[in-house]
Image (cartoon, rainbow, N blue to C red; front, top):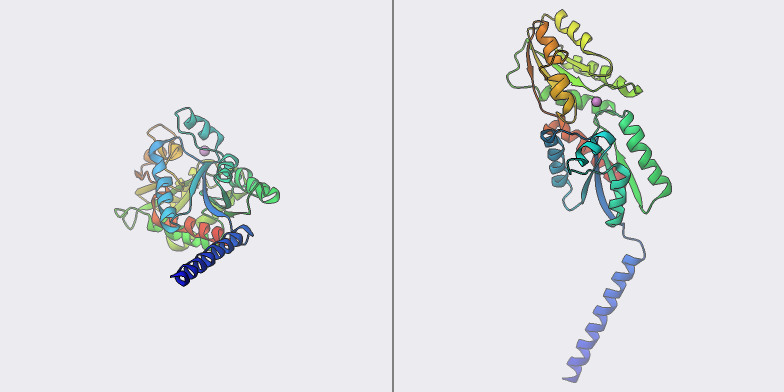
Length: 295
Ligand code: CO
């Protein structure tokens, strides 16, 4: 009886010892800190447009179960407008601070921008580099590329665009993809994308609202090709304000109105790129690579 007690005590001591070793091992700093994902988009003031962001978040949670996911918007104006409606979304520095306070030590930041333009460089890359330089309580911060970055991305995006065309599109119908466009040097991604599209589909065109190529160029191409029917789709993460007004709006000057007046039969499609699995797969790949770079 006494020997049984002694043996039990011995096992208990061993268990305590093993537990102590396990705790020490964790405290020694050998185990990496908690990992988190920060999704960063321009933002939108249109509630229905958030379908794109929601769909992407679902894909992320499915691909990386258990990893906490947070959002930030780079547009100050969007943040201000939606905050006035009680829908606060933080900026990138604010979101990183919240994650740090939540105990996250390794962050994969994924850009949901289309091109590496001003929003990406000034509001995102700069903040990430600053956090990396000063650590700010993080062990590692990695940044995932926007949709269009490498040659592989361009090929994948062109394929995704053509996979996203409506089933009703006829063989002689043109596809027009409306991007934002920018004064930033990264505007080159839009005429660049046109080359990748032309390789695959001679009736697929890229235009931009604020950069080059513009609607005039698209109009000339449609006339030159003798097109009758045109499908209009956003080359934007969300079908927000630009897609609803500049692209598909009924006011004079919208792409739909201009093409209508030029005699084309116009069919706008109000779906952002985040609503298609093919585009989400590209962004998800970029996030996966950012997570790998944390290791
Ligand atoms: Co704009």
